[in-house]
Amino acid sequence: LLDKADVPIAARATDPFAPQQSLFPVETTTYRAAFRHYLEIAIPVPRAQIKSLVLPFARSEAARSFLRPLAEDKDAHAATVAAGCMTLARLINAVRDAERQAGTLGEGEEPFALPVEAAFELCPRLQARLYSISSSGKVHPERPTITAVVLQYDSKTEQSVQAKLGSRRCGVATNYLLGALRYLRGDRAVDLEYVSSAPRSGFLVTDNSQLPGSDASDVVATKDGKGYAMQSFTVQPAQGSSTNVRELTMPVFIRKSAFRLPADNSTPIIMIGPGTGLAPMRAFIQERAQAARENPGQPMGTALLFFGARTEAHDYMYREELENLFEDIKQTAPESQIITAFSRDQPQKVYVQHRLAEHAELVYRTLLNGQQKLNGAPKAHVYVCGDAKLMAKDVSKALTALISEREGVSEEIAAKWVSDMRRLSHYQEDVWS
Image (tube, rainbow, N blue to C red; front, side, top):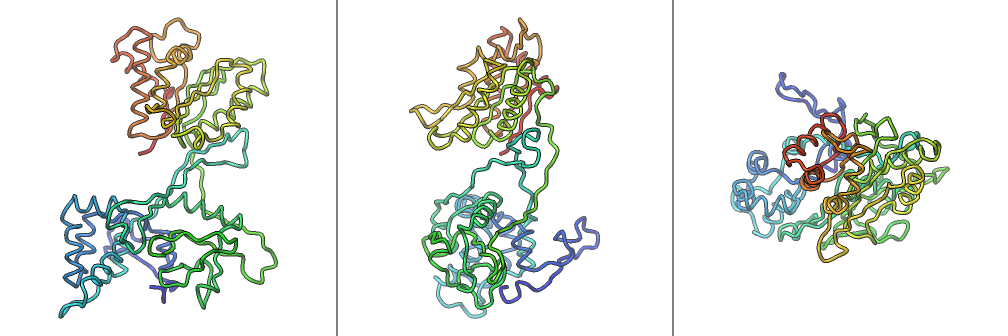
């Protein structure tokens, strides 16, 4: 498609009664814009779609022999496509590699080619990526921030190692943000004159292009084992431009959230945010610290932060900032503190739910908020942010067990009180799988 990448196109449903008549959010786009901005091209191809939308276009025995197990065998698909992050582009190249390895095509056979209509059908619409805002709107009303880890890892399957486009899996949004940051800093650029006789903004470096060994800042370009570029490259300001100032606009929206602090600052809060789950907790802490500075005589509830990560040396985000903010909070809420769990800093792994159990007395006292007994859902607010699959469930179990033990009630009653906290929005979760 490179020869017509910028030709205007429109994609509409053939069924006039289909609920979605237009594939893209605009009437007219281009192939380049469609694959770059509107379609999800970085996910493994589902087994059912290999069977229905890819295998029918295999015109050689080599292509059919490669694709058929991936379409029909669940385990083969899991081991090769899912584990190897075999995206559509990688799948197409893998099929072509299989044909080349098989040698010459047989009589009546044709090289594998996938119609662009099938590619559009295979790739779902690119979805918005939602991140928790990690700054307080009251403290920084004009500058919201997010906290994210750039997702990049190499799959280990044999097929992925052989794949022409490499085996690296990259998070779409975080790598986009990383590329934007590098562009604005001027430390990631490609001279388009070097890679194309007809340079244009956003030119896609393909496997057939002559790729420079380093960019304008002499940062070595990352390549996979076969020498193919594994990163997105951005461009320098246009030659002849009167300014070298870089500017970038990206699509961002802010969605209203119910995950927020209680209106009364005297309400105690218990925050559990391992990893990037720290994001909204940082915003809460900024807000509580500002309130403590501005109203030193006003009562303030205890604030406990349970933060977890792999190692203290490499993963303790915002450490100095958090410690300074808690010093401000402790002026009016002296029991407030940060409690950490670094899972790889000792032989036995320790997570935030373990720290909850270890600090049961402090947690229980915070939940009581001056009462002698709970006798129902605590008035303190609990916030959990991070992994939904394991961490959030383990934290809920740990808190239930803690309440059961300290109150002398059954776990069923304690679980009901925690459920009541959720119903009253005193126990809130911002979690993802």
